[in-house]
Length: 110
Image 1 (tube, rainbow, N blue to C red):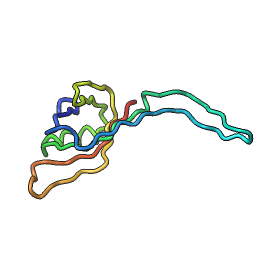
Image 2 (cartoon, helix red, strand yellow; image 1 turned 45 degrees about the vertical axis):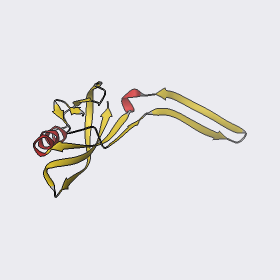
Image 3 (cartoon, rainbow, N blue to C red; image 1 turned 120 degrees about the horizontal axis):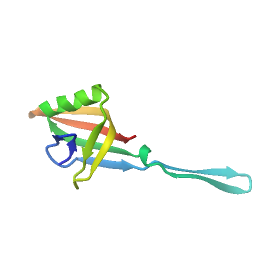
Image 4 (spheres, rainbow, N blue to C red; image 1 turned 90 degrees about the vertical axis):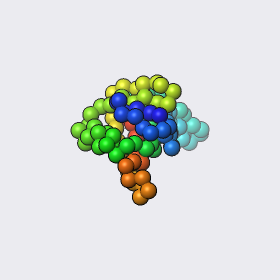
């Protein structure tokens, strides 16, 4: 189970991906290569998730997104991340379970 602020998902995310903002670039030169390395910029890291929420909780999360409210995120291990930007990607409803919403979203560390 994860939390968006105090809003729980029904179970662990179906998909989870963490992307690092590593600002290293290889510059090709005539006689070789050069590396420009600005290191890892943690504030550029992102989480990408797909999780299931109750329909009523989805409406609360949607309001956070529409209002551009920075949120907290608690992962399955209990680690809490603060001041994240919530970015919706897609939602899905299942005919057999109309009271639930499958939400795909990103969380940006800023």
